[in-house]
Image (cartoon, rainbow, N blue to C red; front, side, top):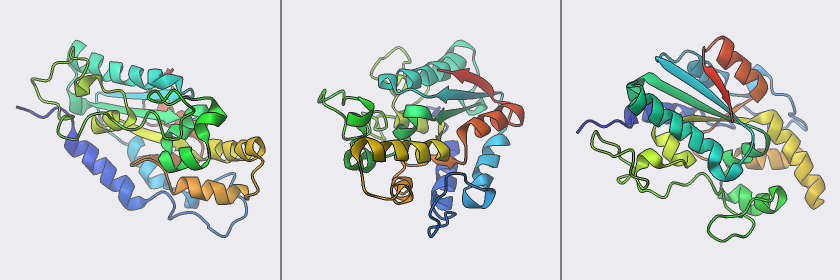
Length: 240
């Protein structure tokens, strides 16, 4: 059976992001990094996204967590384009630009637990119904083997990987996620005030940046990234 997950493309992108690393460009001694300059982040990785070649390039502007409803729309678009309109999976490129409260979905369980993100944002864990102390949207319920999509995978099967709207499930299908550095800086300052923390903002920012979920690219400014993805990258724009 032909593998329709675009695994080779996803693996290449993942390897690129992993090799570059999020933090290697940071000036660790700086007291404030509210505005990143070009040398301080992985601009080359972003420019690769601008230059991607595909029949359909779609950008989702996501600001709310919504129990994952926004990510479900990304999944629906993937399925609609491929199964409804006959666009080959390898001719679809999708980006989730997460900022606002959704920006924190780009960070792992360590961040959610240490900084009590669920209690702060009033987001409950769907399993415990208590304030989330883990990232509630990232982890797929499917193993790597169960997530393999073939020509025989039924898109109408609600338990299939084609209906997996977790961040990890969407990444397996080639979706790339972006985090906003500016939003993170602002959120950390709000977090400090909310919990009356004693740490310096940049200490917390660096701690969080060391704990993005796998293969997330942190961009200098999401609103600027969106403008470039539309104007230069020719990504169609959807706000959800």
